Amino acid sequence: MMKIASAELITSAPTCDHMPEVQYPEVAFLGRSNVGKSSLINALLGRRSLARTSSQPGKTRLFNFYLVNQSFYLVDMPGYGYARFAQAERLRLRGLIRQYITERESLRAVIHAVDFRHEPSQDDIEFSSMLHEANIPFLVVATKCDKVPSSKHHRHQKMIALALGIPQEQVLVTSAEVRKGLDSVWARLTLGE
Image (cartoon, one colour):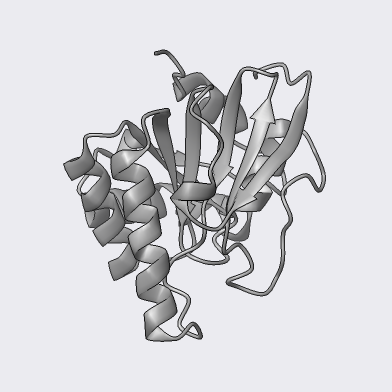
């Protein structure tokens, strides 16, 4: 596991124009609302509440930039697919996410979080396709595996891989709650220029 000496929230940006100057490499966290992106960030950083979590979907509506070890950013992006947002708000957030992924020069990789308990949604599939098209390195990280009996893990991993059109071994199974799979995420992450 990566040694985390420091981690702090630098800014919360409502649009790409409000993001920090390009200075450090960035790894962004993408996923539907309430999939556990913020919890995963906290678990990876060994912090309890650096990234704000909520049981209510749709809380992360800004791009939150966390500076880690004074050398790279983890970026918590707004969640997608939250049904209670007005259609215009959902489209606005989708547009901002797309703009960030396709235009941000310092973006090195995306962690695409999907819920291990369920088959990927249409939104999950569309954003996975967008990452392929944008030619951005990404990891599919299945969250909340502690909510699924271990006897069903192989079946769920296969279900997610098939839906997203990727090899099964590319679905990293994690749980922020019981700290499972975090080393695998760090091991697969490359922050090189």
